[in-house]
Image 1 (cartoon, one colour):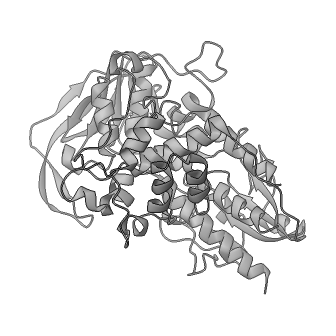
Image 2 (cartoon, rainbow, N blue to C red):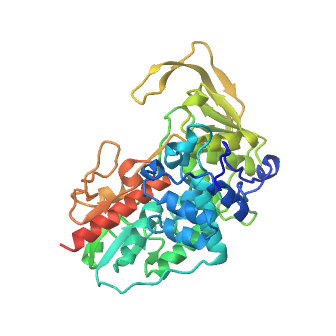
Image 3 (cartoon, rainbow, N blue to C red):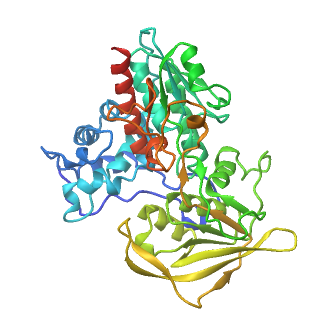
Length: 460
């Protein structure tokens, strides 16, 4: 029976005051009863706009119909026919601006909680079935995948299903890319990522860590080793800074470094090999999802005050509304319409404050957002001992600088054609290495497209 409730079935969560000091997952997930209740809000549209809004074209009404019937295993099989990583996308995909934004239930109320249902199905399957995929017969063709993040994992999985001998190269000591170094444990438990890597290995994908392509091996050397094609899904890990005075002081981090130390190196544990300075007051400069992640990590690492410093207003923040909401619940203080001008150091070269100016919004700029303008005589000093710069990232130049014929645009992103082949024959690319920093689900879509393009290339 259809559930015509105008609001989503609420997601159980940890209490904000409790979770702000631990790294356990914030959202606790639906029960089976909750999932069926929410699934019954779906009208099963004959022309489902939600599918059009999904970068990997998950068959949304079909999987939700199976949830309505209580056949969660079948629901998982429907999802994974197009999406290899539903436990990941169900947690970190911005559904509110993609599939759920197209849901007709959203016209008069809230859309169906597609992401929460996807997460439930993936978690149910992992906890109750977790069958490893079977390895298909090899076609004898070797393909290299550079990077083990969402683009690389998706590409490797799709190619393995087609019989290719896939080797996935990861620069760090743990596979998973941004999923393990960038996204905090409280949003995406690392055991879930590790389970997906195990599934890839069951498909026959060889995972090689500590392999910095461009240093340990070049792309040319991979071809010499017998790989017929290479997919570059190395992400965008090169941080940006403001180039203001004081950025070299002790206590200034890029968000990438701060999150990597926290998430991958477990800096919040006593036995961590890569600790983080214990802070009393932290300023995170930026307003995206990464800024929210860094700020919420800082709070969990013991800071008494954590500030989000953003030069535009709250309405212009690119971070997901859910992430902003969770951050506020946990005590993060938003300093909007503020812009840093310098970082202040003490006699020991440590951060002891950050000079800022007030801003106001003028006319829209090229991005469509109103341009921030400095308010005269509005300078003040924010009392902090740690500053985290979360201003965006660009692709690391290592691969392009060691590969003749590989062209990039002015932002350092690889140039690809309509078949995602780069300017170098046999080298394909996708995800943040091509688009710059974007979402996990868009990277997954790029990985799928890359696998299809490589398959067509190898069959010539």
